[in-house]
Length: 336
Image (cartoon, rainbow, N blue to C red; front, top):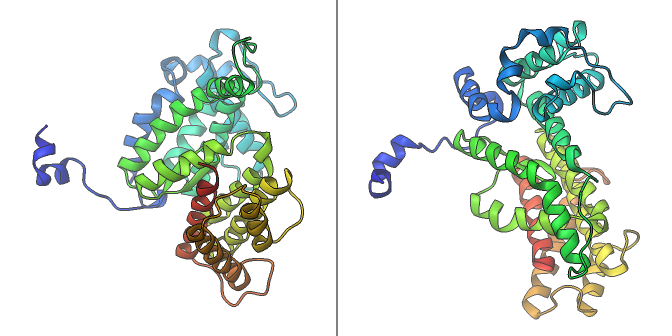
């Protein structure tokens, strides 16, 4: 390709936009992003069939919402789920203004589009988070096959997890391609939206680590890691400080599971020593020095900028991102 042999051409065809927040996008850029993602959101009948205005949705136990089978499809169920969750969760702000008066599938689609185009980045990412939850729920606990006699338990669980994740992976891949091309500072993972890093960091560290942490064994670790990412996305000094606290707690919970098989007691330095002594994590001289340095840095950062102690100062975005990256590298070195 011409762009592969000419750097100037590549710069024109695919310029480096840096890292931007959602709120830095123009309306034209948001429209283009929407068009690239539209197959995941709207099918043609949802977009153009005004009869949706009379197809009302009945809520039941805050789960999925049943409507005329003639119009039921995966994309519209995801849209309705997302809008109903936004409608019930954020009552005072009421981001779903159309759905207040007409709780139909068509109106839910209109509200979904309006939020994507006109609301602040935090609102859009919350909406997309609910959409991802709907994608997860479609297959969660519905694996149609049983373990074969020639399969190990691990092989069966991996096959089941791959099937359950397949629809989300399609959406994740498509959305991340768009986010990267438009220079957005977030990246979608199985644990939600995380701060965008260099592509090699995302591919070689974040994705493998999050895959290894799948499963009930790491549930508490995943909860703390998700809280760390969520606090980081608040984009406030308080949020970054809370992110540091949750990130350090993630490593402690991880080591508690490694050493004791469950979360519980144990400070970071003692857990690292016990895990290395018992051969549960790498224990060579180089690794011992690295872990000692990480422990020292994380404890100092949590003391000075985290939530559990009086703050010397609030954390900032760079510090919080560094702590998150250290946590991911630490876990990767232990597991992958």
